[in-house]
Image (cartoon, rainbow, N blue to C red; front, top):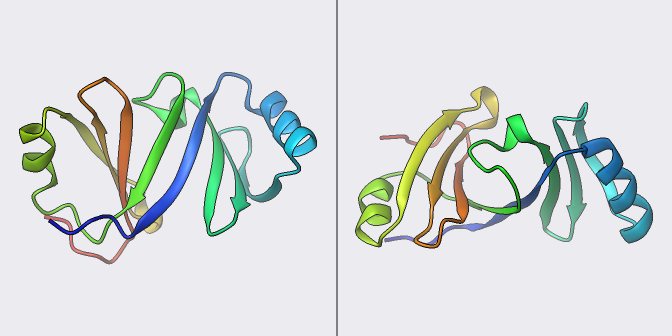
Amino acid sequence: MESPKRLQNVFVVAQRPAELHSFYESALGLQLKFRDKDRWIQYGVGNTSVALACAEEAAPAASGLVMVFEVDDFSGAQERITAAGGQVLGKRDMGSHGAVLSLRDPEGNIVQLFKRQGTPTP
């Protein structure tokens, strides 16, 4: 199995994204990289991104942090995840952005695999 290419981003499930944005911007000095109203607020931090996501955008996560790993494809991912004690929650096509495969690890944490558009999806 090929390991992920990189940590693509980490996002916080935010109940009040606009207020949380004010905190991260003023308290930590994070610089805004991209914003989709209060659905997704993304900052550039080094060679990765940190984002605030509204509950609807973060689904299936309801709270906490979510790690998103970039991969070339999803080949065999479902089998590997379930064999290792995890659970595949589903795949979301995000159009020109790519696709995300959401999973739950054995302790219940949400993790996502991100595949850019144009790479194979079995």
